[in-house]
Image 1 (cartoon, rainbow, N blue to C red):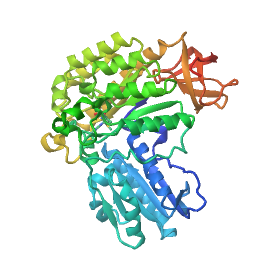
Image 2 (tube, protein in one colour):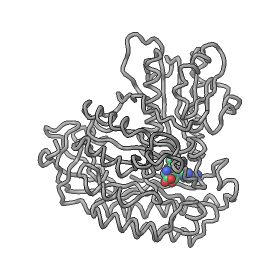
Image 3 (cartoon, protein in one colour):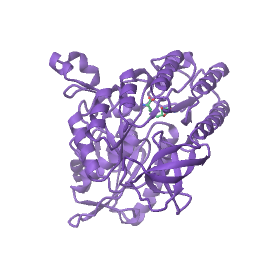
Image 4 (cartoon, rainbow, N blue to C red):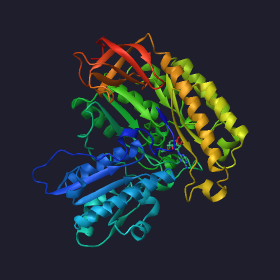
Length: 487
Ligand code: SAM
């Protein structure tokens, strides 16, 4: 999977801007249209919002023209993400001319970043709601129903939505996200997330296990534990990660870290595939890698963003590790889990980046030979440390050229990695019909690589052993051999 900054998408490109459809409740009389942009956390949050509003009399619609309420869950990570949302607001404005009763709410990171300024800048917007305020939506909607604008952008110390059962009805019924932490304390100098999603807090492991068990009961076969920095997960009875020092001895002794949580989830549902995202190299410990190796159902795949291969730039980004420490981590992963896939996020053209820094990035990529990559040109975000302290001084055409070189190298490595699967028989979980052929299934192997193969008698949700016959730089092509023992 190769992403560049010309398409403003982080994880699943096909999902961007998609609307969410809910189960139809007979007694619900109003219609909600909800659209999501950005990272997996945002899609997961939209499922929470939809769940809250289904109890407030809203059925979802995918027809904008008939909506009583339009919600757009927004992303601020790069400027282009925000431009996409502004364009959508223009479209909503046009619809409002024929449907004047329609109300428009902006949710998520852009709402948090711009706060009530949004109401001044975009006259069409009636309601602005930050990522920690979704439980207040019933009150806010009442406000706008009575003709007033409504804003709640208060960030919370303990909100994790652990008590809201998200709605999954628009999913493939096979894979689901389970949110485990909210916010981020890393303060990477380029990143807007700590400002838009607040301080880091972890969700009660008991509520995570309940959600996972419930998903298994409903037929789901794979979950992805989600957080901005999952390896930093720490439950000690609630509260911010940064306040762990102040916890009682008892709280400390009974605390649950990410490796422990992984084990609890893997043991609770031994046939459920477990993935997690995103890992920050500075917080990924050996016990996490060992937990992966000890449990067959934890997938052999780590998304391990590095952002740059230059020690000088890593420091300027406030990434709290060096290139050499990153290599050590990669070596440990390869030693403990030899067939583990690793993917990256990379930023081209961070302020002050020289040609030599860029070459360090390319040589780091040569060392790791990532399976996948998500690559971006640096986009200055207002309010971040980098924006306040460093001039955005790498010319646009240099950023673009460096990004293209990174993408080309990633494509080469992607092909090298997919070729290693050819000739092997690998377990694939079927997710749905291939986009390119109705006669083929699409699924993923443990390493998260997409596999397509003829459908035969298999069905969505089956675990199938597939012989890999061919590949492109991002896809494996094979044929089913038999059901896998996990079925
Ligand atoms: N929490 C993860 C981490 O710190 O590694 C990922 C956070 S972010 C939602 C996803 C990716 O967007 C980042 O890993 C980074 O590559 C990219 N990104 C974040 N801020 C950016 C910026 N100002 N310009 C360009 N890319 C950015």
